[in-house]
Length: 178
Image (cartoon, rainbow, N blue to C red; front, side):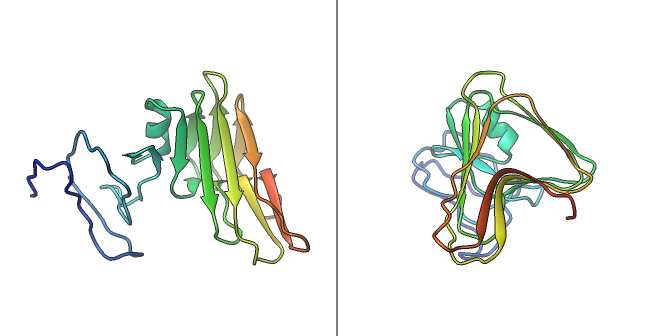
């Protein structure tokens, strides 16, 4: 148990680059935070999103919160058998990666439904890697036996393909052979 009244104090668990677990932590009015590195919640899953300096355990939590721009911190996966509805709620959700072949959202045998109950909602992705060869980088990758329904919002891929590179950016990539 850590009791602290100083808003400038933070908790860092583990070492840089390794996964750490923070369990049963209660906090409020966390202001001035700059990063949560390697943190995960009780579920063992990493922190998924942030709006400015406020971090959210799930992308859905960030989409329901106040603020217009959500930064996705890790790739989002819809697992087999799961039905996930993302309401963009007029927010811009962005993700940037330099990992070769990494996608922003992957639907792995589940169902993803994208709505935008307000106007202006957008999923935007950019992969900055220019070293990979013959890879796709997708805002949404839909694997076989998966379903996607887009009822609203904009889906874009801002990956810039270098001259001569074999990097193929897609907004939505429907995989037929896995």
